[in-house]
Amino acid sequence: MNNTRMILDSKFNPEISINSGQMFLWEKYKNSWYGAYGDYILRFSITNNEVEFCSTPKFDNWEHFIFRLDENVQNIFSSFSNDTILHKLLKRYTGLRLIRQDPHQCMISFACASNTNISMIRMMLKKLSMKFGIKRQIDNKVFFTFPSMKNIHKASINELCSCSVGYRAKTIKSIAEKIVTGALTIDELYQCKYDDARKILTSIYGVGNKIADCILLFSLEKTEAFPIDVWMGRAIIKYYKRLIDNRKVTFMNANKKLSNNQYSILSEIMRNHFGNYGGYAQQYLFYHIRNVKKKKW
Image 1 (cartoon, rainbow, N blue to C red):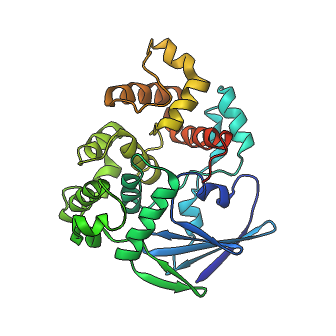
Image 2 (image 1 turned 120 degrees about the horizontal axis):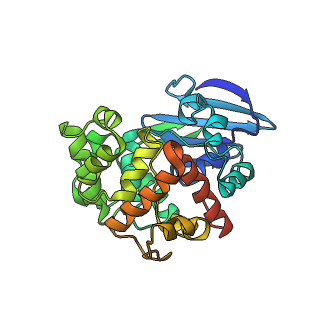
């Protein structure tokens, strides 16, 4: 493993960032965290106020890329200066970063996230990796890379179902087919505007608005995307009900899934409120509303 070191400050905390519902394949052994990121196994270790970053194979300065250390978060957060709720959360959860993910891994991860919880998502992705990824031994521990789209595409529905993904197998297979056949390319999604990219993703079998928004936010640089699940619905009702009332929208139920039309309206309201960096606001609100209920990551 190649190693780099940096001194931690209040603006960056990798440990809370990887345990915030963005990524699901990180494991802790003793003082180190190990994570699968496409073909790479990443590792970081925190000792006092110093963190060491490593990767296998070599991925130079991966921490800068993945944790977006190249971005000036203070400038981004200044765009929320008039929002008193978010201003408090930015101070409370200082160090939480939006993670830049591998697009293929992100697509499959959030396909698995449909109608389930974080522990189940982890279990599904770990089984997929063990069955279709590449085995690597690092620090006397065994890890598996995330499966390539080719390997997923070659798998049968039954083989995918053996990884406990259930009905999600068809969505996983559909995504892989689009990528492998060239019917959909990552470059195309990068270059599209947000609305167009979301339309392309939601045209794939089983990919709804929330899954599409997660993919767009976490892996395709669409930082205005504002994913909304039941947890975010609760946060919006608790802190931003006035925005809904201003639009005379009366459909919100904190315990029910939104229809496509309801999702589109609410997403538009929140994106208009938070602007180009709404995804950052969403992550802090999501992290907070789950912490309030003492939910495990």
